[in-house]
Image 1: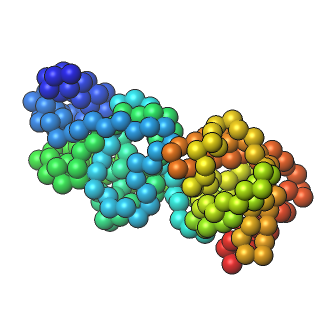
Image 2: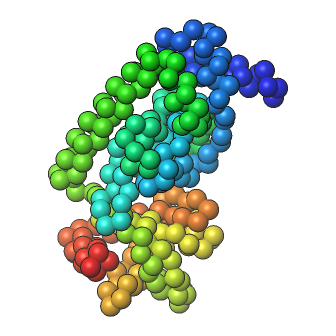
Image 3: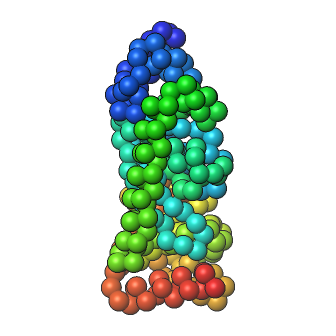
Length: 250
């Protein structure tokens, strides 16, 4: 692909973003020259809570989930974005660190601009700056509403980031990191490559003196991390999961 075609591609994407609808062609040309394109595989993190707020993103293709992800607290989905949407704007105005995490829900192509370049451009385009600040404020309001909604949801994932031991049905002992746990499943980091999507598993998860019998299916997989959906449900299973959560958060 030539530089000209890459430039034209970025322009065609930015023209579809309402945030930039007031810009003339010459100004849009200047803006697109500061964007770079990146490909992000499915289930790959784009940034984490606490990372520097150093970039702004426009989605060319694919979808992105933005969520709060703090150790010991519920994992709170804040928004899902698709082609033509933008994200990462909140940190431009309210601090130097990300207040949430972002992950590709499917393979994505993103247009990315560094914070300094975007803010320098906005200094000369107050109409775009105002629209971006309004969008950031609106999303903040929606995020507060989502946090209140956690109180009435049954399926809440708790961010843990704990090292645990797995004793598999084949007699293997594995040390992995338990990223999060809910009544419906868990996320594990450092699992074997053979734990591919769709594989059924059973193992005993241990942390200190507490253990949890697990039976389920790998629902998604990325290079180091896998999501497992529990096969069992019901009051007894829920009580076992809650006991393990209390131990992990003690």
